[in-house]
Image: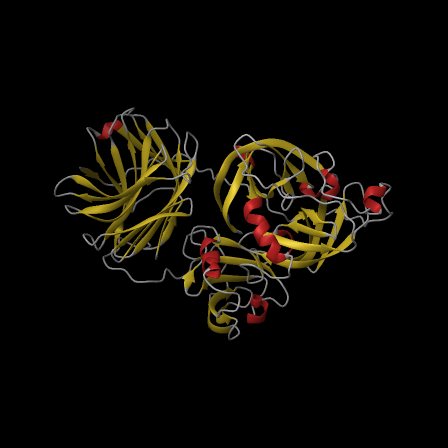
Length: 562
């Protein structure tokens, strides 16, 4: 094993973003005027059954305009109208959309294709963590859609239906199912599993249906990564069970906020930004307001990975009536506040810098053993935008000429040219006992490599390592430097691993006490028990197999308390 000090060459910095198809698209400013000339919409004639072909499906697809007051992380506050989509599932006017389309709105108007008439609608129930909502439109006798009851298979022809970009004109895009299940965790929701397809979703399509040729609803559209032609829908199999509760007036996995996970620019703190609060909800009764920044729930730090996964995990672990501790920052008053959901109301417990912002610094929190190099943080987010003075590398292989490490376009790229070469990037300043390491990495070369996270690394002792291969397999390992051997603690395979060139994955390794836990793309894989190592440094790794050609780009690394 060969160890070296700092290594990277800075080239350029270009941040690539994951474009999520959320709403908030300004609605047309002109008010609805005359009744529609299309009598099938204007008179809402009762139907004997659900629509059974995609050409007629637009009759049951609605444009939703939600008006309310929303607060934003730049501390601006606006009363505005946002536009989303939805679809009717019952002739009595029961319709499905996304939670983020309607929660916190003071007024909801619904429009049909080809009509300027506005219908009032009220919320029956919402689910923040499933990003679903059910609304009741005034009147009855509406055309409606049925659920798809079979398992969606790869290649199934599907259509996205809705009103993207605030356009009052109906839009339909054709595609097919490209992945039967993938992670649905985003900055605003934590759906267990979602469908991936290539039928276009744009902002404003949120809440609209994904349907088959015979107009059966396969899923509810909610997000997309247009730069990769990847679009995501909540599957009918998951949605319809939640919808049944929502239409009865029961909220599911919700506190009553419309929010989004944010991480400070320097990684010093994270949480859930509250855009709006549903009046009368548990959050409202506790004193949560639009513009608050929720930092912890039931003493669990939130948003560390840029998603609401931790927030939703806590909510799903309790009933709606349970008392939950909540902490937040109210930036407009400079107050730090503590309180309880279903308990005591929020009250100020301290103050922050009056000039603080969501890009400022905050407490790292927690304790650690070991020493620091200068002012290097113990807990942080590394986005590889510049020099890396606190990182070094070591490797297994014939020569350090067999690989190259650079930072380029906000990535740390490890290029390997020879087989069986293992390159480790180590964060030097701190020795951790209990620690969590998250990283996002992209396979940029041939589909023949390993990508790893490791913890409790000590010179002449060893470390724990979690790796996944580009072929969909994973291992939890213990490396023993005395014997120069890897000990396999557990291994397996997972459909949650995105395989192939250009595919990215998010890894999580948690070393806590005598347990080592591994996650891939927010899906739990395994916890193993081992007591050989109790502390050490952390880092990431890439390695080549027999082909000797591997290229891996790390987008970010987060080191935090578990």
